[in-house]
Length: 504
Image (cartoon, rainbow, N blue to C red; front, side):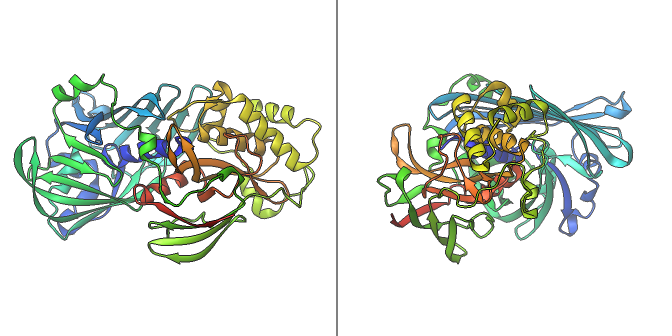
């Protein structure tokens, strides 16, 4: 019951509201020339932009977003620099958290993207990503964290732009009934998703005590709908999310006067609790659970597993039967040949560095002399539980960085376990879902959580955050996978509730 989904929420919020890398895929008739990306937008709009937005939760400020453009026509290769800075200051699980995200996009004098950078800084971790144009539009990208540096290439089409006040130039032309489809590339997680922006109706909005004529927009990202109000000059005045976060146009003076104030509202983690009807008296001893999950679950692909059976599926709910994880009956010898379908859960990834010599050495040390795969997995689980300090963090997960710092929440524990398991030949994957528990003096509820599965002859779910070698029935998996997959949960945020039907 840690902050895993809160950090995904922060990244999503930044994407939807402040700093997309986007490519226009389809437009209404009047936007047929906009597929040119920066060229189409900059040639018909002002080259000097300065947009400030205050971010609020429960009516109180928790941060701001600032977008602007620098112009240097003396340098053909760096004529324009589009910048966005987002800062968040809030309480998470009783602790103050500060996060800064900065994104730059450098364009040449023909408005072609030449270089981009993204930096996410928190109180614990820093991630830097930088890309430079190479041959044929392929960018050489480097990702740096305190413990690792990764180089790779990715293709970014010429019609890519940074979401900013420039995108509002296109949106302001929308009239009710028209829409724009956008393909987004997030420069932090390097994931791709489609955004649909639809003009709903004309509407008056009270903005700072002044009545403004606006167009109400509906922005859909990964199944989540955000409402936005834009005035006739193309200025974005307000955005609202289904989970209570908002942005409103502000001035630099107002934002700077508040920037050092700590968030005094309810804890953001507690506000993300999933409403539950019914009660589990002893969840850690729960052997079976039947529950109804209310919300649009149709797009979630992790509901069925060896522990979970969907008995009813509708557009607005599912009914599930969940069993506690039993001790495995079939256990392999470490190093034995694996079923082909499990091999996809062995390779290293950018965030799961199971091929790093430091990870391999530690994993071998922990499992030295153990030939039973389940015993090897429990040894790894116990080591992570005992050696990683339980601390709330907001970061882009990296197993190697967790191994170096030895602190973090459920995502950090899970990423490190998965890396260690893969390093000694045990297929492992990340589960994201909800777990029933009490948290920080609040009534018991379901909270978003991450935990791993490991293949030891059959799949077994463990929890290195809580030190559980076998999870109970109060763990409900919604999806499995890394950050890009975790963002699929965005569509249920603020809309998910659970009805407990029966338990044993």
